[in-house]
Length: 247
Image (cartoon, rainbow, N blue to C red):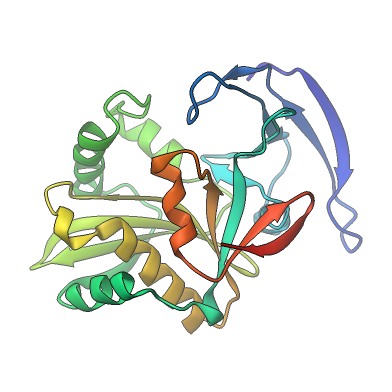
């Protein structure tokens, strides 16, 4: 990462943690054509932990591998950090249908360890859905570096149909909920709507643990691949420095 500038900020009054942040130079946006993006990163050399991660999530940050980041584009606000209010979630008619239609699927929670079967499904998914997205490197080490970190509480949720692995949802446990890191699934089962199922299960799991939020990353209304998150209501967006309910 090229360091353009940095600043320090205080995370909270209880621990008095100070953390440096670094912004990248402007680069082509990954989601919207003809736009430049700037990304703000928490210091990758700092001693991060789950408390810092949880606190930064409340300010719109997200994890990718060991990096915590958020968009910081001076002329664009298309990326909106969003989170679902799990205890108040009201599924739509099609979401109820998806949930009911997938009751024959078995779900199991595993630790953040490399599994050949999971990796094979990931490679199949990426090749079908994102062949030119810069994520199609099949190297197992890079795969684990992308999905996990040494300081996060990460779980791999397996979805199986007749004992066959058909989807994996990666969740990070935060102090006030969970962060949906990534989901991949069998692209040969489109009628199952496995991506939606993964979010529905995660919302229900968050509610059962009596936690408040499922963080879904960034809603981008102008990008088809990132606009689906508005379908999960009630939804809050982090806009102009505070969370508020959005449609």
